[in-house]
Image 1 (spheres, rainbow, N blue to C red):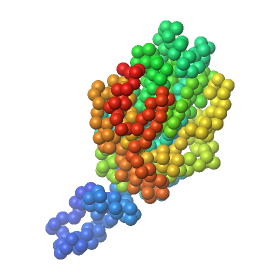
Image 2 (cartoon, rainbow, N blue to C red):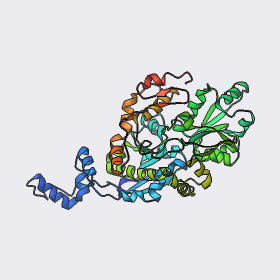
Image 3 (cartoon, helix red, strand yellow):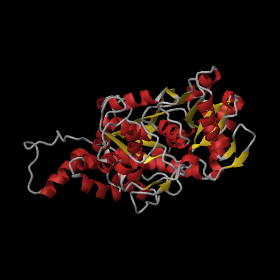
Amino acid sequence: MSDSKLVMTGSDKPAVVGAGTLELNSRREFMKQAGALLGAAGIMSMVPMSTRAAAYAGGSDAPEIKEINVGFIPLTDCASVVLASVMKFDEKYGIKINLSKEASWAAVRDKLVNGELHAAHVLYGLVYGVQLGIGGQKKDMSILMTLNNNGQAITLSNQLKDKGATTGATLKKLVDSEKRDYTFAQTFPTGTHAMWLYYWLASYDINPLTDVKTITVPPPQMVANMRVGNMDGFCVGEPWNNRAIYDKIGFTAATTQDIWKDHPEKVLGCTAEFAQKYPNTARALIMAVLEASKYIDDMANRRKVAEIIADKSYVNCPVDVIDQRLEGKYEDGLGKKWNDPNYMKFCNDGAVNFPYLSDGMWFLTQHKRWDLLKEDPDYLAVAKQINQIDLYKQAASQVKVAVPKNVMRTSKLIDGTVWDGKDPKKYAASFKVRA
C-alpha cells in the first residue's frame, strides 16, 4: 500500500506555507498562522524528534497515518495484534489496524520489506536476519515491542515413540543406533523455532546440521506434513503442537520454556523507515497492542481470546486445542497432564513486552554458532539500532505498563549456560556442538 493512498493527519512538507503568502513578524506569529493552515499535526511534523516526543507526552502529537496494515501468521501468539483490532483498542489511540493473514514467514518478510505491510507479528530472529542480510533481502529493521514469552514446543512423531524415542536423550540413542535420514522442520532459517530446535538437539549432543536433516515448513502446514511422513519432528508455535496430539500423530517432547524459561518469541516488527517516518503512529500501535496484551494476560479472559482467534479468519483451529495451552493446561501425548506455570505470557506487567537488548543479541549469537553469520557482528550496536526502546518506553508510560530498569536480562538455559549479554562473542564461541 503506497503512502499516497493513506489517510494523512499531517504533512511532512508544509508546502502550503510559502514565504510569499505569509508576513512573518515573529516566530510566534509564524506558528499562529501556520497552525491555522496546517493544524497541530502539520506543525508537529516540522518539530525535532526530541521535542515531538515531549509534545506527545502532553497528548498533542497525533498519529501521522490513520490506517496500518499489520500482518500475522495463524498462531496462538498472534492474539495481541488480532485483539488490538477486533476489540478496537486501536481506535482508542486514533488508528485503525487492517489485519492481513499471511501464509508463511517468508511472505511476512517480503511484504514488510516492500512496504505492503507496515508492521507484523513476526519471529524475533527473522527481523535480525533481514537487518544483517542473512534472511533474504537486506533491509534496516525495527522491533517496537516483544509480543509474548514461551508457548512453543518440539513435537516428535508417533513413529519415533514406537522406537522408544520420547526424550532428547532417547532420541540421541536412536539416531546413533539406527542410521537413516532423520528430518526435522522449523519455520524460518533465522527464526525462533529454528534456534529452539537447534539448541534442544545440540543440548543432547545431536548436531542439527550434520546428524539430522532440517527443512523449513510454514506453521499451519506442520501437522499435515507430519501426517504424511515428511518429518520426524518439528518446532513450531501453538496451537500446532497440541493439534498434533489432537490428531493423534505426535507428542510433545519439550516445550520451549523448558529450553529457556520466559524466552522472547514473537515481536511487533517493522522497517526502520516506518518507525522513523511515522513515530507517532508506531507509538499508537504499541499502545494498542499493549492494551490487548494486558487483556489477554487476565486468565479470566483466555477462553474468550481462544474463541476469537479460533475463527477461520485468524488461526482456524478448534477452540479447545487453542485454549488448553493458552491456559497452560498441558497434555503431552504420552499420558502426562499438568498445569504449566510457564505458559504463554503476553504482558506480565511489561516484563514480556520490553525489547531487551540482550534478547536480540542472543539470536545473533546463535546465528553465529550455526554459521549463518560468518563473522561476529557488533552485537550491542545491532541490537541498539533495531530495538526501539525509547518509543516503547513512551508508549508504556501512556498505558501504565511498568518498564524494567535494565536493558539487559540474565537467563539460564536448558544446558546450564547463562546468558546475560555481557560477552556475546565469547558466548557464541563457547558451544561444543556448533557448525
